[in-house]
Image (cartoon, protein in one colour):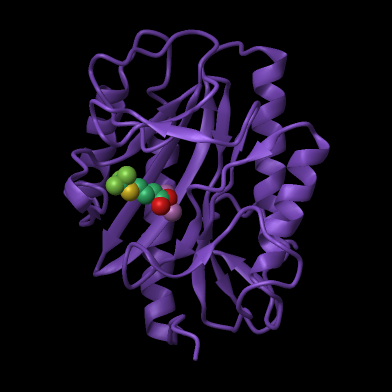
Length: 259
Ligand code: MF3
Ligand code: CO
Ligand code: CO
């Protein structure tokens, strides 16, 4: 028996509201991104925004994680801890990942930002990673296998000469931060469980310019870097399986509403 929770209409509405708030927080913080600003300052802005909208940052205190967002620069794959000591500079690429709890419901989203002009190599990695997320989202419909999300992402990333992080995955989300199933971003075609209407989960591919493997910072116990110190990028949306396909719950820009 599958342990993936099917959400009812009331729960979906709550998860949608939280998801939209998390995405709004990314829009809000974008205005502050410029050379010389610290990731710790951005985190403070995010925390203020979330709390002023009656929500809570899900990461703060989660398994001892200390901050209200994850901010991962350049070779950091994920779980970068915001700090006043980490100063943005021209040419940096960074992922900001925000998870909100609003009325008990979780929404989880991240995207890449670029500081001023970035290298063509960095821009290409960011663009390919966004397309990986979009390809994964297009595999969301009732009766499809979860494995097909990772199958199409891995096939495309490899065709561009990149590698897919396998040590961190997408996840069911909504009533809790991390629920079943685990959503692999590199998977075999037609593997895993079947999608059913009412399931809510994230797709959040991390794509590396070099090798796939990662190393966790020994001092802070969180920051995950590429083992070869090459660039990494990530985008994340929270999605709902509908009767006919998908709804991207964190899509406040109606980027996917025409599909
Ligand atoms: N938001 C991350 C995700 O997409 C999880 C961060 S957990 C933390 O799953 F503890 F590192 F904050
Ligand atoms: Co997530
Ligand atoms: Co996230």
